[in-house]
Length: 278
Image (cartoon, rainbow, N blue to C red; front, side, top):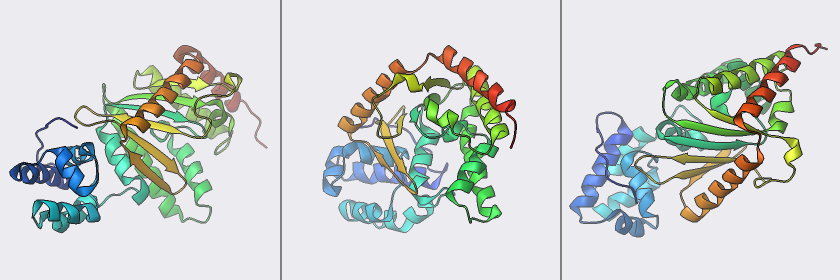
């Protein structure tokens, strides 16, 4: 269960909902766990709504109104639920922006927070081969905006383990790959990310079945984000989070050290830069 936090209700619609939820719950004399039981969710989920870490969905808002004998949440949650991000990723983007630490294993592509605009454009164009240029431009812009959380000198900690397969797949062409890898190195050398490469020679590893994305917060339990093409969900189940955290730790142990990883990325960037273009 998350600890109390003073929210500024004027800072965002979600902060207003969170502050009102805490006020209404305490007025009813309920703990987060007790309110969660009434809604068939965890107490930590209620805490994440109160701190603004999680986005309140309309069905949840209606259930809260029923449990707390209000009509506030259903009337106001739609404004807070609006997002510029795709629906399946909106909650994860909100959480990412508030996280103090993000640990990610990327098996197939460079993590979104470390992508260049050109690399992101190649990824989105592959996803949407018939999409309009306007839509692709919008998606690239959103991805670049997300990465601005790394402009802060301290938070969040981004620890990325990138599979060698993601680095060997030529996405957008040789020049785009050279720029993309140099960008990853630059972010790491500015001390805004810890980057490790999981080499092919590591063989079988603890996350053969897919990506891992763990997010930690100062005032809420950790979250795990599961993602597939066009879909995604957050999970705060302690056992599930603990299992994937252990998997990430095993990946770190199998990966190249940060220094060796940056040396490999530098060398690969040079190779891409000097490839002959067909």
